[in-house]
Image (tube, rainbow, N blue to C red):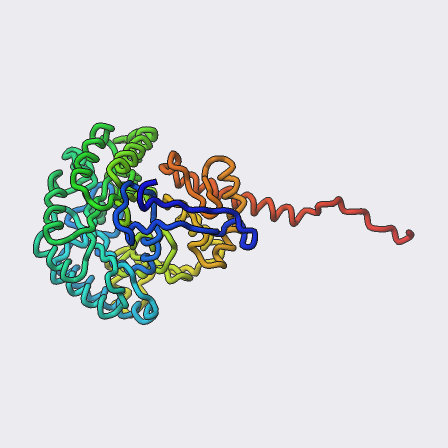
Length: 454
Ligand code: SF4
């Protein structure tokens, strides 16, 4: 084992049931300093630090990428002014009920948060700091597109407490950037990262994309080579999912262009994992890799099903019991707030069933797997009741591995994590139907009623 590598000693605990952690060894890369080798995470320190997240959606981009169906549009002075005013209204609505929450992470996502100027960003950051309890030293991430990273913005972000930048590179091959309709040049991420480092940013992440039309094994290799040369602390890498209504998605769905074969996409993921691992980046979630201790705390909040508060069009929130999703379109979201109405398009109170389904689905995306001990006792019990048999069947069939305290998808199946999760959900649903049938059908033949003459 390398220094800091995690080992968990586990076994059944007859007192508490099969889904209970018995004993757990330390990882705590963040506390112990850098580890020697890539390790799969998330480690305990990162889990502990991911308590509650605050998300701000900035719905503007300089241009729309060919694959993107996010809530975003072009920027204008009038739209930005309306957005900022409405955001302040939403903050005023959401801050009082969130008074008991101390936020351990803040995330400006989009859209392109770096598309708005320093003054607009400072205004939002000031209002957030006044309205919410943000923990000292909280992780503060801002998503930026490489072409918009400039010294004046970096200074404003740094002064407001931003300590992590997530840069959308996607590819380092010019022809692929054209396919994806990305507006930055292939060399721009390197310049943006260097500028960010020169301004004191020490936690940098790069977004990459694979499995899209025209990408080959050789071009993916070229992108990985260029990305690794920049040595960011964190990578996110997603396989393209063609979305209807986007230019690239529609072209794929209409047969005008084709995705690489599924085997080639799986191979690209395998190459990604192997190359990153060899360079010291461990996988901690299906699509996320980092140096030891550099896990994105904010995203862990989502995967560990902890509370988060979302602001802005299309933003979502969860207080531990109820979820909400805001109107997607800027106009609709802003109009609701201007009229003094709630900006939500949907609100759903979690049931035992939905909570257990979420915990199972989110937990299995983590490289360390679903750890029932991460959840409160009632949810642990619901997981056992609803998924215990299906998880055991998945282990028996080789879809999962377990050490008695956690269930995880083995590495060769990680690329098809969604299929494994769907199999478990279907197996659990079948088991519920079977048990209902068993309850409604008498297990013994019904005897003939006794004759009144007997
Ligand atoms: S920069 Fe990001 S949010 Fe904006 S269009 Fe491209 S993918 Fe979508």
